[in-house]
Length: 231
Ligand code: ADP
Ligand code: MG
Image (cartoon, rainbow, N blue to C red; front, side, top):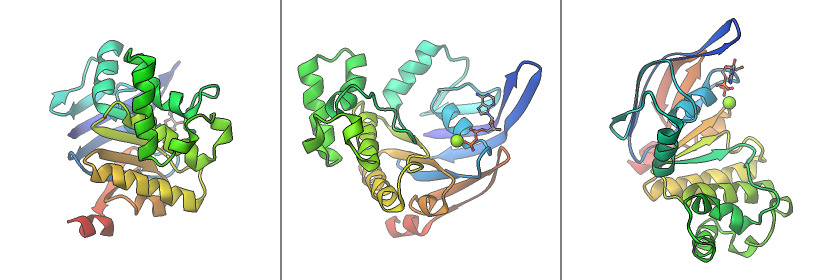
């Protein structure tokens, strides 16, 4: 599903260039649930943004679903993102003045699905994340865990093949974090590939494979116990 070889990326600001990804080689199969672990500044978000076609890379190769992702126009990148990818962020990125149902329905709004239909589908996804009763509440009336569930429902509504989550539990307490990880596990059990960036060991241990990033390189990777129990 995701195949990356000798991938490099630098950020250039003015005369300065910061080499962030220094030759990444990585394969993630369809249906996997992996975490990308590493300390702050190791390049995790940069790698996830490249995988999610939010940012371009400099050299190397990135194949998504067998297609080489290069020289992308923003239109084409947006098309692949809509077809393939759901995003979840640490800060939820919900729209404050829209209620839970409308937030979940938002991707369908951009796909020009009519209001009645998109709200009906949004309700089905709210049901899936256990929040149907909260449909008419705005984000400021919801707990952190509930907000993240809303964000996950919003990511799922366009039926992505892969979910990319950048520190999705970073703003949550431990108990709520584990509940959100359980939800990701259910999503993965339904066949969706899940990639989670985290700097927390206990979160990464709730995925099936851990990829350790250090200073822009993969330092090591291994399968977890969770993987064995599913084998
Ligand atoms: P992580 O997610 O592992 O904390 P990042 O991928 O966000 O790491 O960042 C890696 C390095 O790249 C850091 O030194 C960061 O400051 C730098 N960086 C990230 N984004 C940008 C950007 N848009 N412009 C310049 N430097 C950036
Ligand atoms: Mg980051």
